[in-house]
Length: 418
Image (cartoon, rainbow, N blue to C red):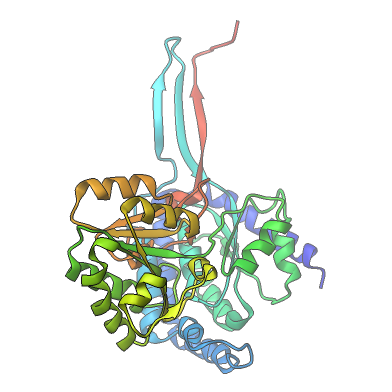
């Protein structure tokens, strides 16, 4: 197939739909989101049947157990997808929101107002619920979207898109506002990244290889979601029971996601009292521990951590552990080896917490809370388009607000420049 021609045709239709969405008000789009949620629920049987086709091929693609879990669409996950769309509909409309407005001494009215970006391309892997979440956030922000999921979930993604398009049509909005690429041809990814003038923004959501390929091919802006090398630092003034609970949750509750803890840093002042008990529980939970020399001296069943371990996103029951001498040493380690995603401190010291939150250069910084909280839905955004580790134009969990840009509206009364 001619991937460039294929993308040009789809993007042309999406751009027309984006123009129509830009003229709608928030109520119209919220009603459409609720119609899409109803369509997803109604299509539950069809979605599970399509998903079974994908699951039947999971071994062919060499998917791990964690990946299969992320791929699976059961009744609960389908209901959750619908619920997320309804939650997005309840959010404040970001479009048309005034960021700042003021009058100049000469009478000119200056206003900075939020507007849609236009057509957004989203490239993702494995998780079919991303199709629904991404489409919902784009619709909320009056953007059209072109979605390209992984080959392992193509039947599921197409079925979800069909339901969403039925919902859009029933609400009187153009179905072309949500487009799912119906081919697994990799050249389509390159064509999307180079569709200057047709697609306004690309968001790759997947492994480092995918993100690198998109960035290298892109002639349009890219918002990146790189590795989640997340840390929990247990400070010298931490409540050790709280620290144990947070560490266990951050590593074990769902290790295969980007906001799971990959490195535990423990202050030397409390390492003797804290590490042996925690590591015993981690080992009982099936976690493989790779520790520094001082960790090995305190805990028996530990592999020696290498330099590579500090920069590895395991996405599994594997944990790097390091004893550090101070708050400053912990911050230095995080800013050197982390991925600027999510990092946490457990401490009873307000001063230490303030230093940590100011100095750690990450999209989300937690105080006395698990890194697993770094999530758009848990932040009250309804869902997320991804977690940006960039600093421009969005950072952290991206909701509908992050899918808008702004324009200046200047109103005069015959004003001219002399």
